[in-house]
Image (cartoon, rainbow, N blue to C red):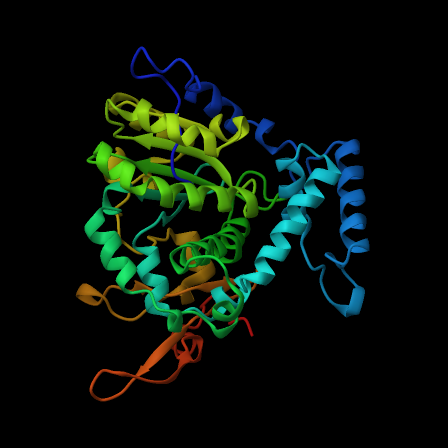
Length: 395
C-alpha cells in the first residue's frame, strides 16, 4: 500500500527520474522471472541463506520453528523471505531489519491493534487510504486503488477529529510512540498481510506453490494541486519510511495515473524515501498509456471502469469479489445493502486458509447514542450472521 513514484519523464528537467519501461515489466511479469527469490523458486545458495537466517533468528529468540511447543512456526517462510529479499539475502542485514520490526510490532502492540481496533476507526482509515478492489492481477496479486485527491485539508481535518486514544486497544495506548493516524494506517497493512494476501494465495492462479506476498497499486493523482501535495508531504514521508522499514517487499507495482505537469517537483521529494529497487517498480502513465498498460497486467474484468476496464468499482466502495473469491470467503459478505444487495462486512478480518474470522470491536451505544461500556467484539455478532458457505468459520 504505497504512495508515489515515477517512470517516464514528463518534462525536460526530469533526468533523474527512473526510466521504467512498463512493456518490459509486463513481459517479465508474464513469465517466471518475477518469482526469483520467492518460496519454491530459490537457488541452492538462497535456500541455504534462508536456513541460516532462521537459525540466527531462533538463536536470538525471535523465531520458533514448526514443531516447537507443538505448534506452527512463529513466522512462515514467505514472511522471512521478504526480509531476506529486501536485503539481497545478506543474512546479517536482514536480521537487523527483522529484529527492529519485531521490536516495533511489540512496542506498538500491532497484532492487538488489528484484532481489537474500533470498527468505526478502522473504517475511517480504510476510506482515506489505498483500498482493495476485491480483484487480482493475472498472477493473483491483489489490486489496490488510491485516489490522492481525497486526502485534502478538509477530509484530513475531519479524519483527525475522530482520533482519541479510546479508539485504540489498551495495549497500544500504553506503549505506542506512533501517532494514532499512523497506527490506523498500519492496521490496514495488517489487513493486507493477514487477510487479503492469504485469501489471494488460496485462489486459482498460475503459480499456486508460491504464496502471494505483495500488492499491485493504481495511484490516481488527478485533481491534486501542488499545495495539497505539499500539505501532505510530512504525513506521506512518515508513512512511507515506517512502511518501508517494517513491511518490506510488499509492493509489486505502482501505476500512477493523472500526473500533473508539476509532478517532477513532487518526485524530487519522494525519491528520497525509496531505494532504487522500489522506484524500479513505479510507473507514471499518460492518459493514453493507462488502459494498454493495465490490461497487460490485469484482465479488463479486474480493472475499474474509470481506468478503462469493466469492473463496477469506484473509490470508497467495499471490495467487489469475483465468483472464486465469493466461493472462498462468502462469509465476508452479509447484510442487505441498496436493493437487497449483499455488502462486504466492515472492520478487520483474518483468513487462516480455512475460514474467516471477523475481528475488531464495536462500541456499545446507550439509548441516547452515547458510548457505553468497554465495547464488544465485532466478531461476536458479525460472524454469526455471516458463516462462510464454502468453509467453516475459523475458531
